[in-house]
Each structure stands twice: as structure tokens, then as C-alpha cells.
Length: 222
Image (tube, rainbow, N blue to C red; front, side, top):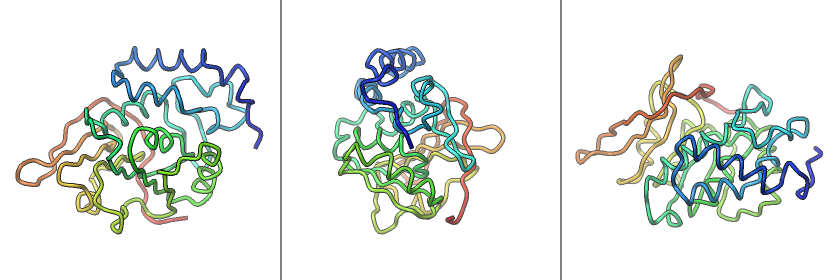
């Protein structure tokens, strides 16, 4: 797959700066998240035919009925997962739904260790190819059923899902650290980003954020 030259206009700092300014205007305030969003080359994760739109704040198709999330949504989910923590470089994060690998690259620059699960092997392989040049040693890609989480790697300080579900799988709750949080699109026809934190009794308490639209969480691998 042909990619735009890193020195071309689409990859220029000016183009990325405009994207960052747009997501800042939409409410992203975390300076670490803004910095990381400016660093990750989004054009590496889209088809060459769509490269001219790589830094627009919009979702773009990546095949197999999936999309690369719009930059604002990736930034917002990263911000919610970080939740003001000063120990981000010590956080272990599980991503459900690697897709093309863009969000995984953002999380890997923000957090200490990131494990990302993708159920569709073609997307898993595509993400691996997309990420190779970035050399993110703290990012690990797994082909598997994200509904099951990764019990052998638990506990996780944050679990971030790129697919919507009406109910959070029990495995995620079981694999969440005591003070961890889950960021997930909740709902079916109507979806909202939700953050789930444990209360003093160990129950998950949800806080709803803005409306979003994600593909549904599916079981099994292909």
C-alpha cells in the first residue's frame, strides 16, 4: 500500500496543528493528550486514496465494516482513560478493538504498557503493518475475542473499548484493577461514552459523557 511521503503536505506540522486546534476547540484540555495526538501520524493508518482527509476530524472507512475513529473521539477516550492521573507512564491499558492501530499508537505514547485485542485477523495484520515503523515497544497486539479481555495479563488500570455494548462483559470488570476505569460506548441505537469506576463497595458506577456512534461489540474471532 502506497503511503504519502513523510515530508509531503498531508504530513506537515501545519496540517496536524489545525487538527489539534479543532479538537482543543471541542473541549480536549489535557496537554499530554494534545501532544500525543500531534505526534502520531494519522495518515499512516488510512488508505492512500483517503490520505488527503487523514487530518480531518472525521471517521474514515478501513474496510471490513470498520472505521478509524475521528481524532476528537480518540483524544476524548484517551483523556477519560487517563483521568488526571500523574502516573500515566505506569498504567497498564487494555484496548478492545485495534482496528487499523491508530488509537493504539496514541495510547502507547500516553501510557506505560498497552495491549490491544482485535477479533478480525485482516485488521490485526493491517495494524501490525501500520505500526511497524513507529517502533512502539510498549504496545502488544493480540488476535482474539475482546469480550474475554486478557485474563493472563490482568489487572488493567484502564480498559478502553472501540465498540459499543449494552452491557459491559463480566470479564472486563474481573480484570480491572481496584482503582481502574473502563471507557466504553454504552447503548445500542443510542450510544454514549461512559466511564465506569468502582465505588467503595467494589461495584462499577457509570458516568455518561457525550453521544457517540460505534460499531457493535461482537463475539468470536475471524
